[in-house]
Length: 397
Ligand code: TTP
Ligand code: MG
Image 1: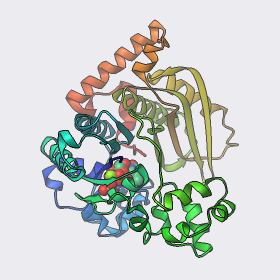
Image 2: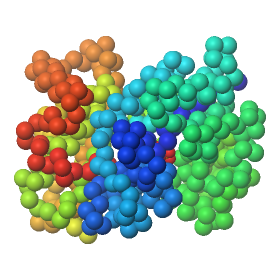
Image 3: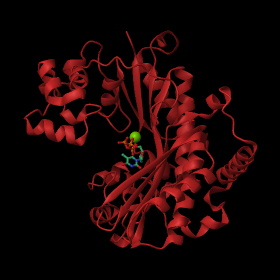
């Protein structure tokens, strides 16, 4: 019998801010773009549970968050700080199982099958991990325990914040039956809308379908969703950052712009920030993605894959500038620009396989790592000269 834990930090960015700034504790904290008195144009990254009571949530336009909670504490994200805490938490996970799959900045799956002799029954393991996290980071997490990944992930969200939810083995179908279909891991917004339009609202409504009909109705993913609805999921926990598929950041300009030098500064700043996150996670990337939103919200994406895996700023900056210059916007102004990296591979693994950097890149990476170290010690004040003027006017994705 498998024992899978899904652990997800509570209101992660906001909780780190509340921990680091005692004055924010107990207050509605909203991490995201600068609200600029209601005129800000970016989005909310996350909101503390106090702010959620006012209806503020992730991905909401910051202007709307300001409308709902004008007295909130608005904080600009500090990604490097969150990555640091994220790494600290992963170190705790790895004490309990060698099988830790990191899914995002604040969540992971642990396969604790066979760990009972060492640490106790699954609930005791969850309690121990939560206690370590709290003792060492002063943060809380919520844990889901189940026989498989999909049910564990759903369970961890059921008693947030600071909760433990366990689905007894063999009871997966009953556990999921009353939940809305949107809770199924993998049911996106469009699928949910379509299912609801057919009167399929609860997970049990899918589970009751004939599997052949489910496949007919839902196409390729129909059978997968049908299995999930019955609590069947045999996907293994894959150690490492297997599912951390991309790292990206974006910037909404205060006014739609065609000022190339301003756009270049933002690209440079984002390239610096994204690659410092890559380095903090000991990852290399091969694909560079760009998102461009024009006046009127029309949004385009562009990407390029290069042969050499990289984690240095110069590569990302140069490729991003090239993608931007190649994009034909026909004199239309830019509302938002974003860059990201995907096709991520662990750095150590590259080195083992002999895909080493050319010497010049090694030197560049060492310089950038030095800058990362200085920043960790002295904070974001340490900056490349050319980046300083955009640093205050920037919001992360
Ligand atoms: P989540 O785990 O989805 O959210 P959360 O930790 O803030 O809150 P919860 O207690 O519900 O788990 O995401 C983790 C972090 O990722 C979150 O703190 C901020 C960031 N994030 C964004 O920047 N934008 C988003 O749209 C989402 C969903 C998250
Ligand atoms: Mg979370």
